[in-house]
Structures are given as C-alpha cells and as structure tokens.
Length: 398
Image (cartoon, rainbow, N blue to C red; front, side, top):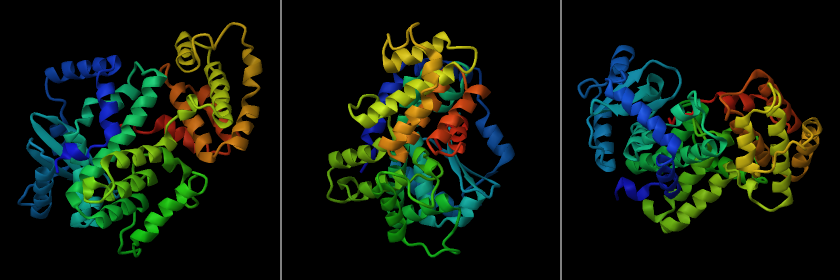
C-alpha cells in the first residue's frame, strides 16, 4: 500500500483546487522569491534552539524514522530534533537545502511508547508526503493581504481534511490502532497511562457519545474542540475508526464508503447552511447576515471590502442603500434567539465561527468588532473564549 492510496479524497480535491487559486499562487510566488535570496534559516534556528537527534544519540528513534520513511516513500534526507517543553507537540517543516526536518518536544519523546511515536512521526511526515506545505495556510490567513471569506472558509475546510490524511499516514506507519488511540488520548489529556489506566473502548465510547446527543459536544470537553484539529479533535478519532474498518487498512468497508463516512463526520464543521433550504438553515443565515452587518459597521462604517463579503455570500444585491442598518443591528439578539430555538449548539457555534472568519476578511478584527462578536457569543450561550480561539488561533498545520 502506497501513501498516495490512503490519502483522504477531499484533502486531494481541495488541495488541487486551492493550489491553483490566484491568491495561493501569489503567496507561493512571494515565498519562492524570498527563498531564491537564500535559505530561510530553518536549519540554523533548529541547530541553535534544539538538540539534533543523531542515530548514535537516539538509535531507537532513528530506527522508527527509517521505518516510517520506507512505508511513506520519503526521499529527502531527514533530520530529527528535540526541544525542551512540558507540552506534547511535534512539527514537520517545509524542506530546506534538500533536507526534511521533524521536531519533537522533550515531554512527547519521554511520554510516548515506540508505537505511539511512530504514529506521531508518520503524521508529521504525512504532511510532507502529501505536499501540504504547497498551500501555505499560515501565510494566507495571517498576511497583510487577507483572503476573501470564501477562500478563508475553504482553507479551514481543507486543513481539516489534510489532518485526516496525515493521521492515516501515521496509522499506516504504526500499524497499531490501539497505539494510535493512546497517542490521541495523551495529546488530548496531557496524561500518560502511568497515571490513568487507558481503555480504548471507553475512549471511543466518549467520542461516540459526543456525536450521539443531537450532534452536540459532550459533557466534560470544551465545545471548541469541535472546531479544532490540534491538539485533539474527537472528529479525527471518529475518522480514524472509520479508516480502521476500511479496505485501506485491511477491513471490509470500501474506500468510497470510507470517504462518504468521513465527509459525514466532518460536515459538522462545514457551513452547509449557506445553501440548505430548511428553517434551521434560514435562521442561521439570517443571524450571519445581521451579525456581519453589525460587526462591519462597528468600526468606521461598512467598507467596500466588507461589501464584497456580502456580495459573495448573499448575492450582489443583498446590500443596498435602502437597508436600515441600525434596525438590522437591533435584530441580532432576536435572530440569535431563533437560532437557539431551532439549531443545535454545534450549529450555533458554526455560525459564530464563520462570522469570526469573515470578520477578518478586511485585514483583521478591530477591538469594537471583537466586542460585538463576543456579544453574539453571549446571546448564543457560547463562551467568549471561543471567539478568541477562532480569531487568534495558529492557522498552520501541525
């Protein structure tokens, strides 16, 4: 089985689309011009801030790396590094000087077993094998010239599917789904099995319970987990269980049915309400419309860039001079109440999430705009910290 055979279909489809988007091409051209001037200093920075793990210093880790390299077909020389941190973390950097670099935190290396480390290493190498760095999410979402809301939402959607592909690469390397589950448990809890007796059945049951109750996040976990891919997302666990039962991992479920199942799982995080013809979707759209008007008008009126947001999502003639902006702003709380009555908590969070993403389209979120977003969160009974997470979160792939 080749790495390309297990790549998530939606990852590949969105990757091909985004790679050819004019804004992605523009940013990649800027990066290429910068790289042509000389190395970006990744290796120099790693050598000065981390410890390089040579085969002589860490023979077991080097052996695991060799096994993952062979399974995934990695062709570039690999250098491994460790840095001091109490947090479980790892990262794969874009190649430089024809070398590939993977970095681990010290606590992760000490707290994970060999098979668990294989999953993490395979996950990080998966980002390289699938060329995920060709879509520079961080540059696009944090750059001076922000992407329009439509592109921003597509970038978020693609990054989630990219994590699914990387997880499959990690599972392919580990060939031990119990170890994969333990890795995700440790990344989620920060605990090792030395403290807690790990139970795969109980852990998976928790994930199933979180989906079963009206598609809402379960008790005991932050609701914002449903909109996060790092350090832990219950949706990723569910997607891996589907992968385990598929023919790609030696099970009986077809690859086509696997992708349908994964898309169904991740659909909880996608704004399908923008096109759906249901009362719930209509309530969600009405809140999004009024909320965006209120946010856009909060700082120096509604700009031409913000008008383009409305044109993309609500039609060219959705915003006219006849609109009573003050009156629409006064409807936000009422429309939030309608969403609370008709939609699940997850769906309410989806509207707020999309509102935050779209609010960044004109170059960032001002303090007055953030205050309004937090008021919408309060009206939806969502912690204001969720607004901070969406706006301030690191947008790079892990």
